Image 1 (tube, rainbow, N blue to C red):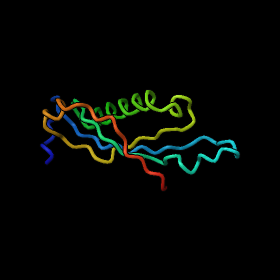
Image 2: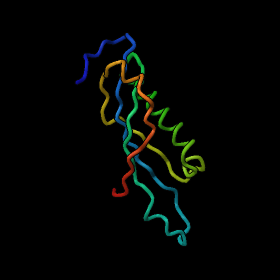
Image 3: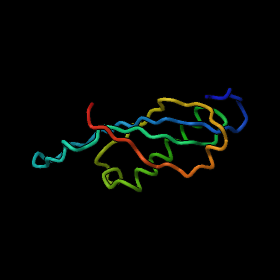
Length: 109
């Protein structure tokens, strides 16, 4: 259940992030294109004063994690476009949970 938004005060936000991947042109001999993900979903809990700030923090964390986890992201083989599918106020206790840095990938358009 989402709590009421209190502008100006720090709050915990739940941000559901949808990432879309746009792959760079590849060598025609490279047949790995079939297994390349088209996008993913993940979520982040962040501390912010407003929705825009929460989205910005969540996107920054997702991009940072991608750069650490995936060489194709570091090497610029795919462009990452992020969008917030859902942003809601969440209980502060959610910030105390271990960070979930996982992603649920999909391959279909």
